[in-house]
Length: 114
Image 1 (cartoon, rainbow, N blue to C red):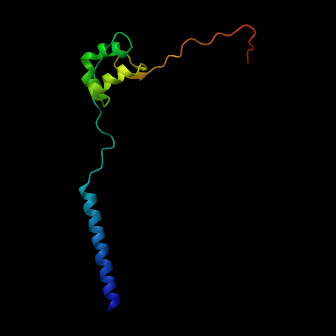
Image 2: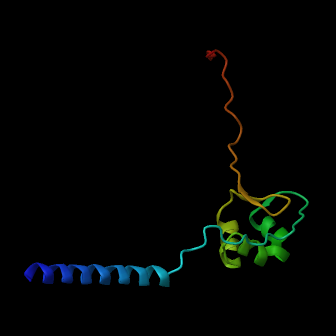
Image 3: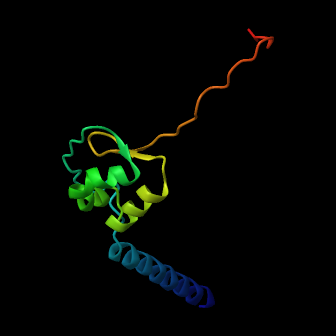
């Protein structure tokens, strides 16, 4: 009789656990693996630009451009003004470009490695 009671409680507990797991798994929805792509505006600029020049060139497109990069207009504006390495190409795509300056001048008598 004791074994039967323990078995009955175990089965009841197992059934309750399975029911809870099923209820929670049915009530939740996983995030989309591939969310729909944001619309990128059709932009034609005369040349690549950065900083205030980029903001001026992109002014008519800023709301759409910022949204396509998941930013607010203010966030994108702040990034352009704060980060001098952020550029826009002639189609409005953003990229980072670094300037390294002139290469060092070799001095007379310096040995070349080769």
